[in-house]
Length: 486
Image (tube, rainbow, N blue to C red; front, side):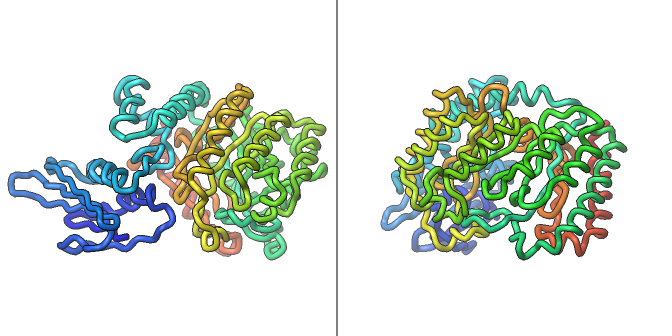
């Protein structure tokens, strides 16, 4: 299918919109004066001498064609033009395909954040929700979900201390790579020789970041160790350093370790976590169906998950999360529902339900067709109904590109066990300072609203360029923080 533009360059949002209806398709692009003959979506913008603009949009699928247009003021540019183009093309695509995406024409990854902004602009959540439904065509079900999450998040956002930040430590190593994974992770068998130097460098980076935080009067609010699979390596030293630089100087709301894969969890690595005050861990099944785990490249069984979960309970962890993925190959609606039921029986404090997203960096991207949308929708609906009936509340949500059924990932938690880090991170409501290869830093405020710094993705590059990277990072952090910290 061809994405045709003329008189403007707003192709990104048009592609994102088309992916709601053709999620697995690769598109061609044209900016010719004439509209293409074959299947396409088109947006042509013509400026007039009187200062107005004429926007003409069309869509063709098979032999069916729809078209529409409107006159715009010359001030309609950028994201405002994106909205106008989407507003014309979206009804056409719904009509031509018979599809009605649950999130309407929203293409961003943070719809709850958008609802919060609408509420601030309109003066009420009710008015913002009405805009979700009528202007953006979001379904009643998803609008209500966003409202529910917004109400749970607000006390967590309000409780964030002034001048506080989140700390993210990246451990980009895994024993093996799961087939659905698109994160930057590296086989520990291949990269083991880098780990001693990686320890030294993350210590140096923690020292640097801590010093800059002191300069600007910042304090840690949450600490999160992610990856990769952090429990692939010995975390004693990194946790000791995190405690020394960020935790012991003031109380924090959360200290999470993404333990993740049960095949990496042992009594020997869980015990130090308790000693260093880790408040929350993840023990992630993804599924309780052994055939699904094998197809996903997970080298453990469902019983292994149960055993490691019970071990964590024995050691004293009272805030455990479990992740599940709807739409994995070999899974069925019945199998997924059984997995959710088993999780409810075990009663972790939080359960996160992801929808499979086919990312280019994942093995599944080339080998797997997009999962059946109806089946994934049924899985997600069952999870929401079952978890809320069991006392879990949805508390954060985000979306991804190429996601099954164009749905969402939702974190559910028992009241009082919501992860502040997840809320602040996904809502873009707090500065997050990343440490280690592949970690991202985002500093709220400044000219662009959010300033982002990204480390080298791969450990070998991070280590080879460390001194250069840290000089650059220190300068950028001081520049951005100097604009916003008063």
